Image (cartoon, rainbow, N blue to C red; front, side, top):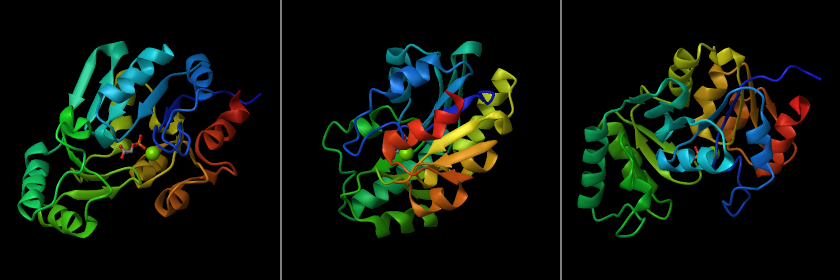
Length: 225
Ligand SMILES: O=C(O)COP(=O)(O)O
Ligand SMILES: [Mg+2]
């Protein structure tokens, strides 16, 4: 058997099925992985923390596309990004008559500390333009539009995790599905895109699985199981 590397894994589109539900077959893979597991997502921190909690693994998470990094082992929280600039974009977008699209309570933005997300049901182009005008990055993950700090991504998030754990990004196997995983793929030692990945993720990955969604994740980690 090949030596098992530390694992950094995306959530939406990678651990989920096509209905966005986490595939329960991934739980034992994560809980039995013999090396550190980092959950790296565009979602706000409570989501990956809850995943780690209920799977029963250490909280080692990259949330908000790198804006929020928490490493339980060293009790370290890093929050980076120009949230004020992102909120200014959201306000300008609303002033144009558009909505965030997640309803009144808006759980997608409620616990978000460094960026702003807009539902895919809302117009993309004005948001993309506003993000550019404010010097921010626009991301379409296939699950939401993100307006985020251009200097931060899941790759810089992995750097921060590694500084805490005494590891190198190049030690890691990374598995993901969309353009918010591209920088992670660049810094990881081995990067795998699941078959449903977008063009950016497919182009930046070292290999692409035959299977999609969680089946693709299970295929990606199979050599190490
Ligand atoms: O929050 C998103 O838009 C995508 O989340 P993910 O990074 O876990 O795929
Ligand atoms: Mg994803």
